[in-house]
Image 1 (cartoon, rainbow, N blue to C red):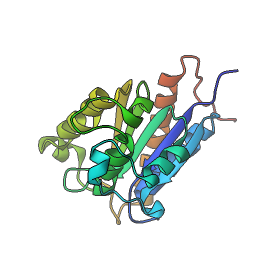
Image 2: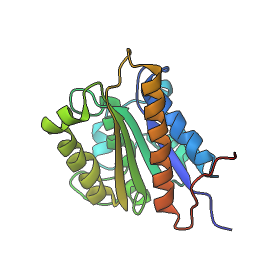
Image 3: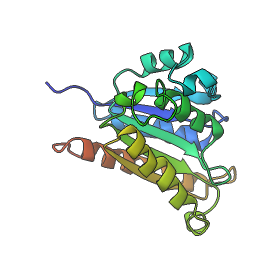
Amino acid sequence: MSETIKHAIIVCHPAEQSFTLSVAERYAEAVRAHGHEVVMRDLYRLGFDPVLQDEERHGKPRADVEAEWAALGKVDVFVLVYPIWFGAPPAMLKGYIDRVFGAGRQLGHGEGGSGSLLVGKRLVSLTSSGSLKSWLSEKGVFGSLRTVFDRYLVDVFGFAETARYHFDGVGPEMEEKDVRFHLADVEKAAKEVMSRLSPNWEPYKPVR
């Protein structure tokens, strides 16, 4: 019997009733429905400390980071769920990448530490913004994210591949039908990720 595929969902938003949290939960529901395992890391509710200390830059992870890796366990897919603020991810998420993904790596070295646990894994980004995707593309935001959070992380940590899905026009005045539309697309994204993980994966067929 093959091992269960595990998704680590790292979600970052200060409001517990946010669209971002809804995206994380819908993705989790979609993959669990197909027997996949989920570990949810809600950075704000966890009170994660994003501040990288000097000793960590020299390959000495702190106790809270070691505890985080223990909580993650063996992961197949890392899913980053976050809003785009001022053209970039929230600082707390960047700190998570600095401290957790980069744990044990020595300053100036391209390999080592917990980074070896990321080699060959998949990285999925589920992002949202109040601005339209076309406007963000015009301003170079998506090009920057693809460079820094996709290609660069592949090169540095050895991810097998990355996938990025974006939901725009998100805000406090968003109509319920638009929320449902976006969350349906989250399910589609989850199914696409699963199909790339398992060649014999069969899409969900609703019972009529």
